[in-house]
Image 1 (cartoon, rainbow, N blue to C red):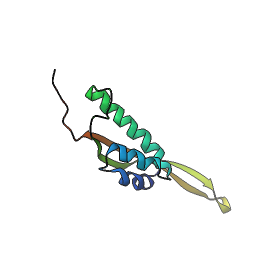
Image 2 (cartoon, rainbow, N blue to C red):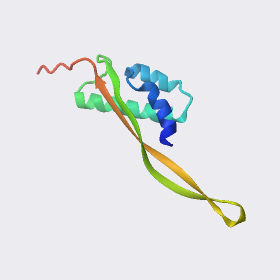
Image 3 (spheres, rainbow, N blue to C red):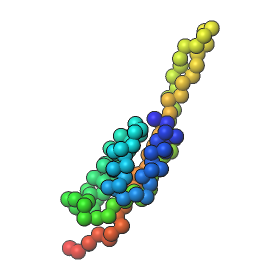
Image 4 (cartoon, one colour):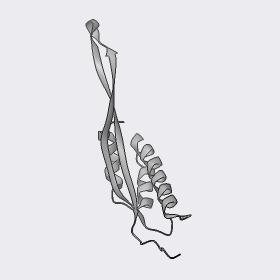
Length: 109
């Protein structure tokens, strides 16, 4: 998917709470929303693993950083009239999604 198409959806969830971002992605009618929902769920799970908690419901997680950068381009060719070929650029992207907590973690041992 091209970075331009992905940025349309990423701009909607930047800075939002995780619950709000998931509901926005669930009802967004774009293919990018499906990919971002998987990525956001993975980011939440990674945060839980790193924070050593069983559930993220007790914390106020939000989307701290959401960026889309262009990735590699795959070139394909389509046949064109009079023996020519049209070049098709299949664009890719890199999405950076950072989930953070607004409430300080209890570090009591």
